[in-house]
Image (cartoon, rainbow, N blue to C red; front, side):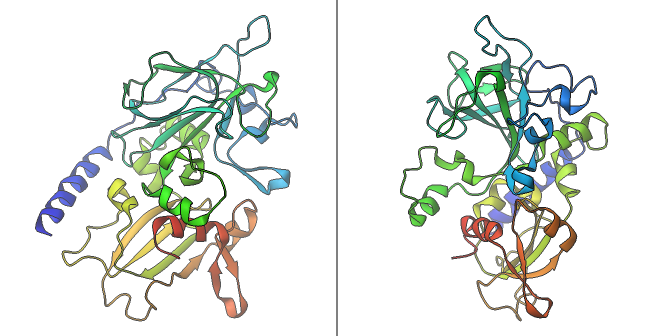
Length: 339
């Protein structure tokens, strides 16, 4: 236990040091419009409606009821057949964690996931609907910022993207659990999980364009600053001795060290999309009034929760009590904090 505390202290110290550094990041395609400060309509691909906002992050489709986890970056160059020629590039220094080379193997089509261990938290970036993967790119390869990793396309599984809407779907986020396969198998979805922990159901994104804009304007320097400023939509407490692997992979999201004797519970803050961006370990005294292993919502930003119709984190019940919504329930299950 002492060794564990020492390790956490070292990680926490490095996190504090990293939090003051400015991340080096580039736009993931050669489209110059974002860097030039132009409107998003100059670089975002619409989803068929003609409205560029439908290619943004969030509840941007079907009247606000359909959630879109990333942004869709449109093409700037095409060949004689009308196929996109733009390259997809690593947004930051990172490591290749996953490659899906099969065009129809996922709703993402061909996609690549990079993890960025130099960042706090160690976010992933995802690049989807690719026409091809860069030759020689392999899982485990380190990639520097700006390296070409693939070519923009319109690959997809289960539906068709026309070539005139070719784009790179780009995400930034965190993975819920390294044991996603176990959760997936227990749910009996009826199909195999071909993508390990890099299945889209295990990935929680932040708004990549919002982060990029805040960074360009120097309102934030890094992901630690950005995550710390996410608005709390749900705050819950749970009495449990479980320590989700999420907290070990993203120790920078802990507000204080885990006690020497272990945890008796957690207080977790979620943003409106369900990202658990703040974790506070609780003592036995702090959870003595709670029923073991039953999450209790203690705070809800009702204005945001009711406005964002593409996600359900909290459900209003009689007497001013809030229950856990279906999207939050799934995250808690994947974290191992709900049955």
